[in-house]
Image (tube, rainbow, N blue to C red; front, side):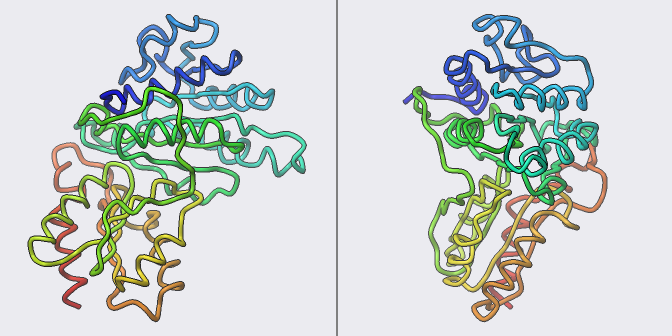
Length: 325
């Protein structure tokens, strides 16, 4: 084990992949000598050369168009979109090309070697163009996988699994956590299965669910709730597409209550899909309405960032509201 922050863990996963596959390429805006805006690719161009780790023009649609072509020829394509907010010009390439490659060919060809890394969410005072959480846009698209890690250990294992998966994967990295903490991470290769949620803390009173940066928030809320005699079952969804309905339904069947938290705006956020599905699966077991604690239905503010992002006190209030119903 080594002490790593999330950036080191991501860099380690990329390093293993580049060493493993001679044709693997890392590309995106400023990922070369500069090492990316957050330095996630630091040292990799020096180690593997400019022909395998290289900067692209400032054209996200072009980055994904090139990535689709490279992946279609079987090479691991490790594309970086500098901020998740910038992914929208590439939306057509991802949704209409990457996601449909396998289907339209009857499984004759695919872009399963494509992994798109991008930092998402707030916490760095980035304002409206550097703080969005766009995972729900892509969760409506069959053919993609969507993954969000919560800590360094999860980041390396989930990224390696994403790279080795036979489907195109969008890997959303919570930028607020890049350097926020360190953890024990194996230096050797390992993978964490995609599509499986993790029960981080067991409890009998209420299920609290989140992913990525919001995991720290709901864990803090669960600690506050425990001081008031409320025992929360805390779950990290980890994979948004596909998502692990079985683990969530099993937990809610036990607790009878569910609070979902995500940083994206509440309307049509992925929490809405979870709430609808769990309501259908667990209706007779529910003791109170499913609640969501999410971002607001406004553009992401700069000056009022703390008011916008769901925090532990907001989640605690929802936990108490559910328990008091």
